[in-house]
Image (cartoon, one colour):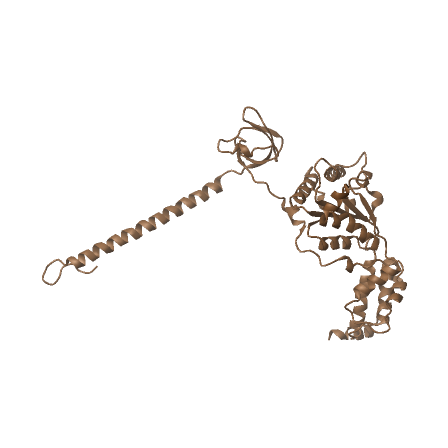
Length: 405
C-alpha cells in the first residue's frame, strides 16, 4: 500500500481513494470466491448424499387399486402392494410401466423410462453385409422364395393389400451345414432397408428361470419399435427341439423359452412389419408346433449344390483370382461331387496357398487338384486314420516355405 501522507505531513486524498477502491475490488473478488466455494460445497454434499442413498428396487406395475395404492411385481421376489409417493406423476402409472421402489417402505418413488435390454440391442446388425443374391451361386428357387416371402412384403406391401392376402410371417431355412443358409440371410439383410437383428438361439438359454422367455419378449418388442425389421434366429433347434413330458429343470426352462417364441410368432400382438428368418441343420428334431403354418409359413430346403451351382460358386470365388489357361471351372465342378459351398470356398483358398508356396502369382489346374484332394479327403476321412497322413520331408518343407523369405 502506498503511503497516504505526503512529505509535508498532509493526507494524500487521491492515494486514499485509490486504496479504498482497491479494497472494494478485493471484497468483491472474495465474495465471488466465497459464492463459488459454497456452490462446490453444495455439489459435494449432493454427491455425498447420492453415495449414501440406499439403492432403489426396480419393479413392474401390475395394477392400481381404488385407494391409491398399487400392485407391483418386484424383480427381487413376490408381488407387493405399495403406496405411491406424492411427487409421482400418476398419469404415467399404467400397467406394465417400470417403477422404482424405496427399499425401506417399498413405496413407488419414480416412474422409470422405457428402455431397451442391452443384450437385445447388441443383436442389431448396424453395418450391413456386402452380400447380395448375385454373390450366391445356385439356389435360384430358394432366392426366389425368400424374395417373395421377406423382401417383397417389406418393399411393396400395397401389392398384398390389393390382393387381400397376408404375407408370410416367417421363413425356416433347413438343410446340411455349409450350403448357404446363413449366406442367404446376409443377402436379405443387405438388400432391404429394414433393421436386421441377428441372434443365435443358444443365447436365449439363460441361468435363471424366466430369463430366456424375457429375452424373447424383449427381442420382439425391440423389433416392433424398429420396424420394418427382420429377425434372424440361427441354429433355432437349440430352443425349438421337440418337447418331452419329463426332463430336467434346464430342459423345462428351454421349453418355457420356446412357448414364448411360439406366442410371439402367432399371438395376439401382430408382427406387422417384422419378419422372422430361422435356420437349422436338424429340422427332424424341431417341435411340430413351430413348423405349422401361421408361424413359419415357408419351409425352404437349402440342398448341397448341384453341378451348375458348383460351377457358379467356383466362378464367384475365383472372380478376382489370376487363373492359368489350363483351369476349367466346369471340370472342377465335376470333380467336387458332394461338396458344399463352404467346401468350394475352402478349395479355392487352398489352391491360392498352393500357388503362393510355389512362388507364383497365378493359380494352375494342379493347384486346384491338390486343394480338392486335401479338402475333400479331410472332410470324409476319419481323424483316427493316421496311417494315411502324408509325411513331408524336411527338404520338401524347406523348398515349399522359401516364399516366406
